[in-house]
Length: 184
Image (cartoon, rainbow, N blue to C red):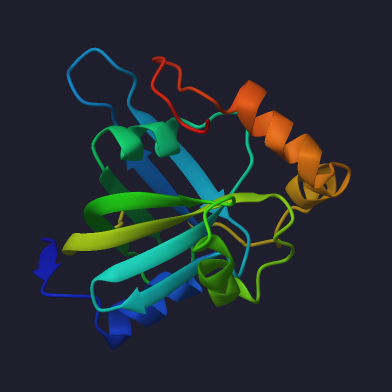
């Protein structure tokens, strides 16, 4: 049976920070849009900022569903699974907001991720004010061995200039699948 916690305590924080990947789930308002689940990873790109606040460094990608959904309604769930050791799943439900790379607050927030492999390809920081912290058994999650982070995303962004990334957001990340605005 799962448990609901009042906040992210020391033990939960240690579990969350030890996971090499997590999943982000969002959905647009109403019943017609696409629900989105995105895997996130790369060591150093996630941070617990307090007992009820977390953040992650968001890199340019093939879509911008999470950003568009957060701008639409702010609803977000982050899920962390233990792929080794004792079985456990932790979910953080909350309200998210996006601080894009062209926002003056971005530089200060990005400094939190000083262990990130490279921030050149980052397009935003996603902040989450956590409203519910819960766990569940994770008995059905397979045991997997972590082989390291892939460097393909970092390599792809290293080939792009800052202007190229501005163009990428404008042409490939401007709207979601459902036509919601993401990056202008």
